[in-house]
Image (tube, rainbow, N blue to C red; front, side, top):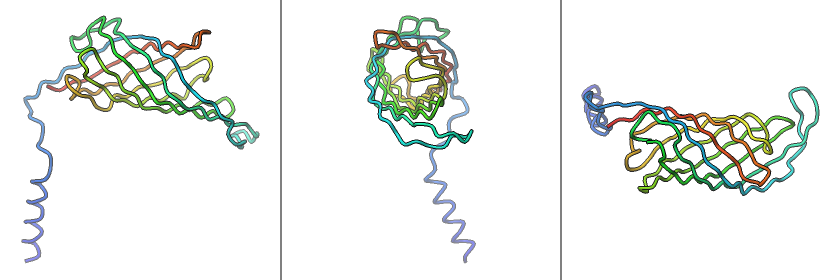
Amino acid sequence: MFMHTVKVCLILMMGLLPPRASSDAIVTSGSFKGEGPFWPHWVRLNGPKVLSKEGKIVATEITGGYNIGSFYVTESSSDLFPEGAAFEWNSLIFIEKTGDNVVLKGRSMMVDEDGDKFFNIVRRNDGTTEQGGAGRVIFTEGTGKYNKVKMKCIYDVFFHDTGTGGLPLNCKYVAKK
């Protein structure tokens, strides 16, 4: 009787699983490069003094805020991200600096000219808050034509004396149809 109950439970649970993707799904991939300006709106606070890995006492800075900007495709191998395509890009950023080490984490959203959106995670463990540095953007989900697209980009952000920044991206993606 017990085994019969277990089998029934397993059958019922299998019915709750999401359907498997069809093996005839079309998968495409591509890459593109892009760049665009952004305007950081950050607040910097002094954090506690901590002991570094080297045994020195160093100050911690906490910086947080948002970036507003735009982005356009400069080179592309695909129709999904054609050259000249423009996006609005908004980000929430949190930066922790301990000594010379910078850890940046953020969430952002890109919106194209049709209103389709991409949501992503931003990470950087390189550079400074004043001069920029290299990092990664991982696109987690999207709407519309970006619904089944997964993408990773590397970037090397820089800042101008005017208070604006530049964000060149080099991206690779996989899309299911």
